[in-house]
View 1 (tube, rainbow, N blue to C red):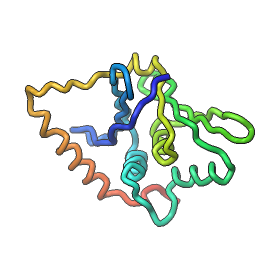
View 2 (cartoon, one colour):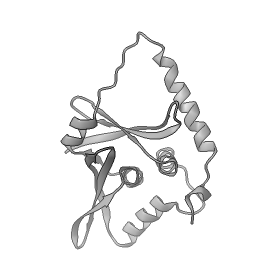
View 3 (cartoon, one colour):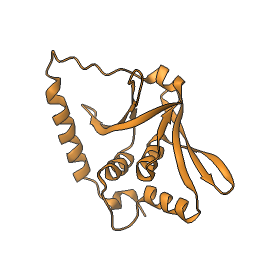
Length: 166
């Protein structure tokens, strides 16, 4: 298993599709870009920014339930990639032992950010889908991060906690 860090949640241009970007903490510093849904992108961004909502969103509720059951999210693991679909596990410890619970990577990362637990990936996933970011400075790439941030800000301004249902 290889430990990752959440680098960003951004909107991929020109399709305006949310994507979360994870990167190896050590080693080759490979990255994974995983396309996710809009509500999940918002949930992750809210957690990264420490946004508090009047009522708990689904991921906050899940963390509250874990606390109520005296369970703890130990880590999340992106376990595999089949065709274009990523799979993840939540590793939850409780008095009854360690449980592995299948989850979408976007939900797993949203929970990891809230719980402050580490994120891992299998070596196979990184070998298949990981890439090393090209940091060449011979183009206009310095302008791109601002455009991505602005696009994501517009996306965030258009969603509200009510978009997540009850």
